[in-house]
Length: 167
Image (cartoon, rainbow, N blue to C red; front, side, top):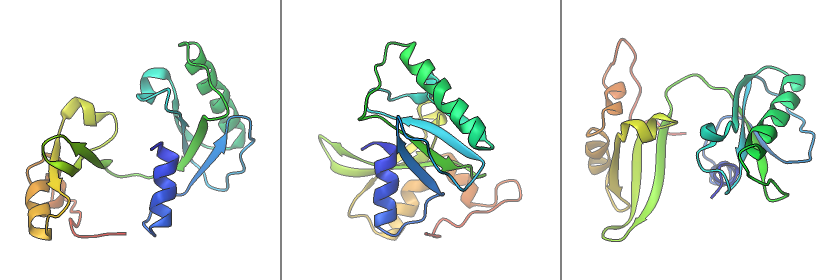
């Protein structure tokens, strides 16, 4: 799934997300929330930052339009041909810690949940745990506690995040 499809699915399931708007390559977006992060949403570009396909802290519509053109230029200069199947995703800039949650279909274990530190640090740190889909709350918490990022749930540097908080 592309990132905008994931946001749409989360919204459909009534799960909270930052404000967001996906839009077509040739669309002039109407966004009523700033600052935003802008990302290309394309199956042709997996690691967006390597292609210059991410712009952050965009403060207004003028900067948004410039960022759209910059991303298009960056990506096409690397040989990627963009078309109508490609989109942009603008998301509200939110301060905090970026976490990763995903599901993979493992050859041995079947479908399992992945949890860890998100963003570009996901690949660098490889700080993830694997959780059975059928896991109960205790097993989920035990698995999460195996990650380094889990320290944020135990009063790290004066901040504490609730591991059980949802939505």
